[in-house]
Image (cartoon, rainbow, N blue to C red):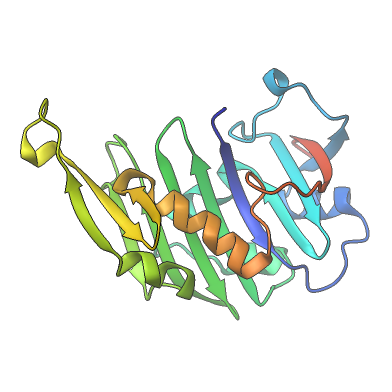
Amino acid sequence: MGIAQSGVAFRPTNPIQDIQAFISQLFGQSAVEIPHPNRGEFDIRNQGDVMVELFDDVCFISNGDLVWELLADPNADMQPLSRRLGSPAYLLAFCHYDSGGSFGYAVMENGVRTRTRLQTTDIAELPPLIESGEPQQFESAWLSATSYLEEDEDSPPEEWERVYRLGDQEVTEDWLTAHMLGEGLEANFGVCPWTTDATPTCHFFQLHSK
């Protein structure tokens, strides 16, 4: 089953006492909590659908519109989002869209955006890869890993796929950013929502104009 998740990961500066009020303030809209929805009735790629996952002291707030422009434009100001989240020391905005082939992250440390990487497939207004800032520690090993072109007799050499190898792991170029995102979430927050066996506390909201 494909993964479609996009949003922010952070450790709240102070405990969130009223999650519904927090989400309303974050989006500037009235957030109404709903029961756990059926998959076909809820999708964080919809403007009004928001999912919150709490893993101990780590909070994931998922909504595609919340972060897409910040990922697509490394010069976009992340400060307003950071302030609404309580100015966490380390903020990671991310997207992981299997079906569309879009994966990326933007990192803000102590109020300063330090890194952006967005890899996309067939989005006319965007190049295949957007990068800014110095690679994070969780990226460095993969970005300096050895690689080779996987030969395919049915395709010309310019279409052969590059494969990165690190230890006994191999990752194709198309999935490199996705793989690094997962490792980055694990390294900085101890959990990646779509690979963990841990069960978070979940809240689902629908946004309505005030």
